[in-house]
Image 1 (tube, rainbow, N blue to C red):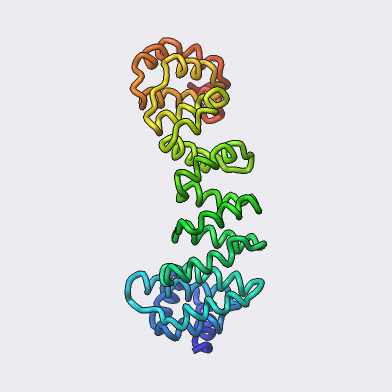
Image 2 (spheres, rainbow, N blue to C red; image 1 turned 135 degrees about the vertical axis):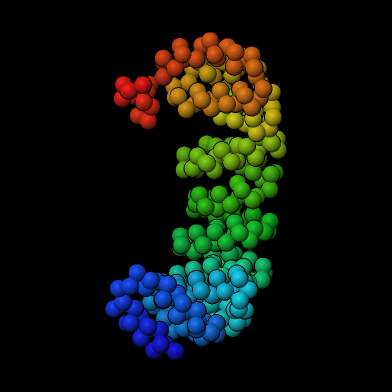
Length: 283
């Protein structure tokens, strides 16, 4: 069977037909599932063939066309734990792609094995799997990973899937960290605002636009003057537009009436952005 794949690749390399990729895919469809699993290990060092086999196995399992043999899934796990370098990466990728075929306990053990690894690829793989197979028992490990390595990936999972209580406790550190991506920070802001608005009050003076975002998320009332002051002090047309949107979401018609009268004067103090027609003098 190994020779079949090798011979197929030779034939395909000489094929210049526009339907070449479809022919190749169809040939793989003729290979029995058990044989594909054996071929995976025989071609472990060939990235192209290996990845195609995993894709076919995943597609067949997802369409309930074939049952992936347990021996293959077990061997992937067993070999991974003793593997290093490129073999470890290859086996880990296959397990990640086929993770829904494993029991939750096996995947949890697989995640625990890697989440505090000194290898960044191990940790990234663990974070990706944790997001798909989240288990509250992993929360402490995610926290330890973030405190030890500062990986944004662990924080990303915590912000999206962690408990409200833990996220509220972490929020000041998340907000203060320069290494946290903006979208993670704002997902955390909105979740915490809904859970316990008092935990986000400290940003009110420092970041009024962000504070308005929290108000919208939590349906929290805010004074008209606060919104108007925020609009008058912005230095970005995007921030101004967002404040206007927030005023609408908070049903602040009086604020919008005031802004209608002041908007041109406010905009006059804001630098033009390169994407605005006015920047090129064509408005």
